[in-house]
Image (cartoon, rainbow, N blue to C red; front, side):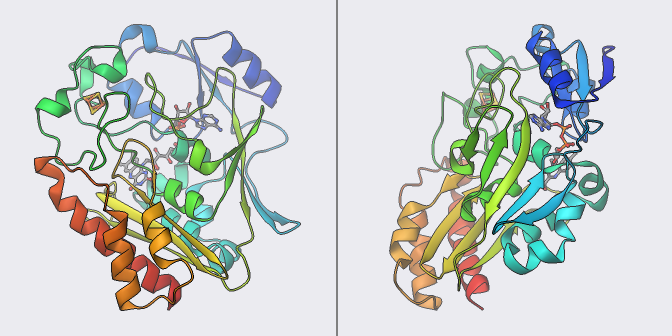
Length: 319
Ligand SMILES: Cc1cc2nc3c(=O)[nH]c(=O)nc-3n(C[C@H](O)[C@H](O)[C@H](O)COP(=O)(O)OP(=O)(O)OC[C@H]3O[C@@H](n4cnc5c(N)ncnc54)[C@H](O)[C@@H]3O)c2cc1C
Ligand code: SF4
């Protein structure tokens, strides 16, 4: 592992100034970043010289509060605190359920909500130690997954020639709950926060820091739920996950690990709009969610999993 300077930012302004100079990257829990740096995943030119810790800033970004009907979660709030918050579970159920399904207790104790939505993808060619596959997401010309083993990759094609899926469990919950990401520069609807860049997975610009997640109170009568399919119950990233919010006029359905960006299933939403949720309508929504799927030979199995998760999440929210 290369050597890094590690600085504890005292204020957000200090962190922003450090980032503006380039060659500096934010560190929060470090559960994504440190592994990536330790394994020398990226080309040398993409390595930071300094890690700037934002868990030390005052005022702290570690909080969960409700103000004027909006749930506000500071960026450095740990996933464990979100998973165990009764206030979040009661009104924003999908988010608490999603947080509780991330990884393991240890990762949830270290990992933050800001880091979770800014984490990089898990494509095994991309993550291979010592930068053995200089793929398109690192500035190369080849997508090795397209030619190789892509069993965990996209079922909705590529974005910018990359078929790696977005791995976050938190992202679809935020989209289903119509949340926003507040940075030191702007407020972004969660649905528009994700991108496929070189190598980032967000629309964040240089010097831009996630400060807070804002989730509006669901409409009266609306309920939400999160479902995940993974190889093992604990530690594994999703093969597919799904979050929904239905009732009270709401019909929002989001999936992840099916495309390079979290996927809003608008056709499924249209299929249930104005209808009661039952076995038949939930199943029809699952099929509608997959209407535009174009799986690879090795990812066809994910289509049935996604259909089933949409159905089960709708029935769970409606229970
Ligand atoms: C073994 C293992 C299993 C996992 N399983 C799952 C899983 O099942 N589901 C799932 O969703 N995730 C999973 N993860 C990913 C994990 O949830 C993330 O690593 C974690 O949430 C990242 O948070 P962090 O605070 O540790 O981020 P860090 O590692 O500190 O940072 C990650 C990235 O986000 C950037 N960043 C962090 N905070 C901010 C901010 N406030 N503003 C701007 N940029 C920021 C950093 O610069 C870095 O690029 C797993 C990770 C591991 C190691
Ligand atoms: S899927 Fe994306 S990250 Fe993986 S090898 Fe292809 S371009 Fe690289």
